Length: 195
Image (cartoon, rainbow, N blue to C red; front, side):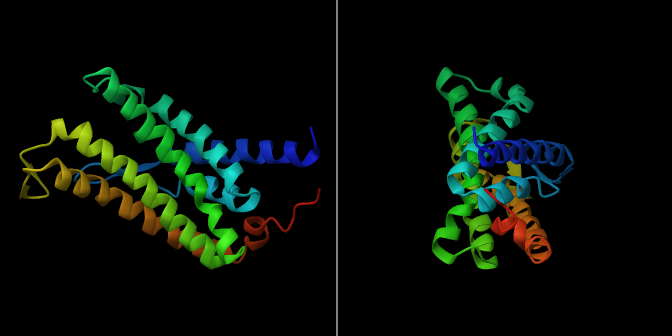
């Protein structure tokens, strides 16, 4: 195994550990869901630093760890198919998508714009996964009223529930990433890496 591969694995393990700890620091929102303190940013950093393919692997591992923390949610599934849906879409695929952020370096170069677009798209893809399970699986637990509105459609309920916390997560992640980009630019770009 090369020194670079070893470094990639070690850095990714550290970033997954940091992301996991940050995911445990959650602000519960009044209408459900919660916002973490930039828990996706370490995975995003790996994706921009080492490339989106390695970012997907890192996001996948992080998703499996998040699944272990959220296994009790699988118990709400009423069928085998919905249990697989929760495991795949709410955890494994959703968090794997976060690792896609670095793909936009191939379009915009290793720039602040690539980071901004990468965060936006990858977290919107994560939202899409939660939205689908919100309609398909969690819609069965839809309350009669949500956000002071009468709920008649799981499509609207899932949009409001998941959109509420994911929008906050996206905004916080974007703001912090833009603030730390300049001082950490060489790390996002991988300029400190020597083979």
